[in-house]
Image 1 (tube, rainbow, N blue to C red):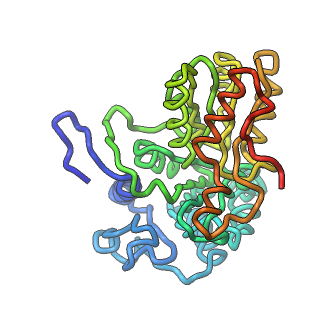
Image 2: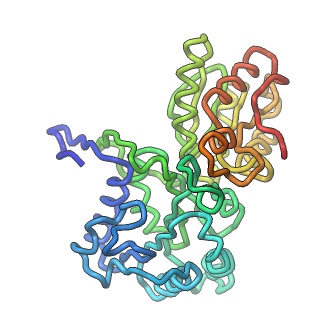
Length: 344
């Protein structure tokens, strides 16, 4: 991380942005602590917490056994007891071992207690493929958690969101899940003071346009922006919408965009069947059907476990060319020629 310029602009990576957010939270509030596998001496599986153990000590940077069910439950108990825990789960695939605690306890206790208990818990985890780590480390399951009432689901895709989403998440009286795409950790960029604080309730227009809405989140936002640039070279003006928050979805912002462009391509690294893209598509059809000049299109991962081999992994994941082909087909009236993935 570079020192701030006179303007206050800082150059840092996505990884450093998350680390600085945690450091600031722990400096500001003694109730905040981090717990998870290898977050202490090792500095985190993705080096996000590197150096925090030396700064805050083992009471607040707590290495846990390899038991997601156990330490997530401990985090829930700590939150109910008045603390503000940040639980790090190494990958979204491993979060399934803690799904009982997340879905049956964290999400439900405030409701089942009639509001007598809150669970002010933040759970961070890595998601997404593209690293040749095979099926047990590469899936995008954030849509599963977005299905569950009682949870707030965040997907920071920019340096500003990585830096700014944690503070309001810790202030939320209910559990918040933050999904960090693994391929973003090394991405660097500028953080401007005016970009903070960050809103954790709304989608964002990352690129205005008039011909087609490219709606994405997390790691797919970069693909959508690249696709928009390529489409611009062909005379197609694509608007890029970053969902940012998968639960609750910012339906008004989505519908406003589609009302402007009259076409939508939904880009989702999760599987096509039953995914976030399917939910957003349904909301567009319910709320903006008569604004559409073409059917809603989806670009999603192939209906297979994510492969290990590099060429197969890339074939399974959404790619920029597929987004460009799909959007071009919608704008030029050949929706049947779209590149959207099909069910396996």
